[in-house]
Image (cartoon, rainbow, N blue to C red; front, side):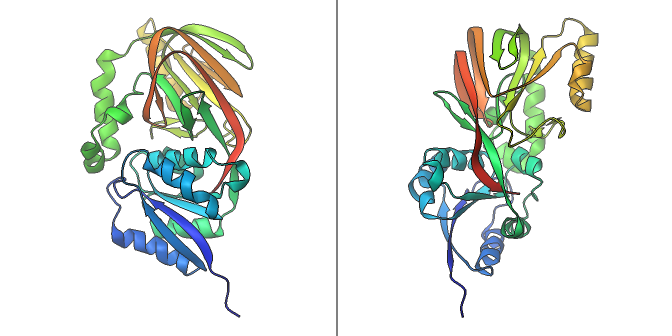
Length: 302
């Protein structure tokens, strides 16, 4: 007796990274077809179109697989969050982008669509928390402000494709002279933290920007909490050195300029409008911003 053919939605960003080709896409399609799935392929056509496509069509499928970078995944998740929880299909992610922080966090193979497809087919779905910048949008792995946060969305797309992660490094170096501190009051589940910060990140990930690593003994992708990392403005070369050492070793307690918190909700209040990024894209300017964590919002294969 023939096995039933299972419908599968594939959402493809043809502009992601440097490796997306019809041949590589075909290897992923073949893997799913060989396991009883009938893929329907949707192509993104412009920034944000993945949100609309997902919201409109994903509820009709048991699984959705997105091929692209972290931005494509972020848009896919945003589209799913606009659906009732019971209509959200499980997500498979085939990372083809440049930084691939979510892929690194989930241990997915980079730019190897056939291998990633096999892992989706045999893997188990992980209940995955999704963050929200209230009245702004959702994020899958990070919302941040301050030093280097403008690097991702200000880096030229052609430079990203040609140089990969080196493009982020180059843009980061160029931004060093413009780093400044922002006075902020941060309200969180554990109380209130106040200071002048050159960087702040609210994340649910083990890797941020491909450079900053979080301790896997601390981060739990499914616990209903996000991590807040605050980098205080250094006043001496020794404090600056402690920041570099603390981030490099993932031992944030050793630096007086690093604060690591865990919380379900947070509220940031600044003295002036501050630019934020949301999953590497422009998150707007805010003097007051609330964030929250949606526990087990989606399920993703890893």
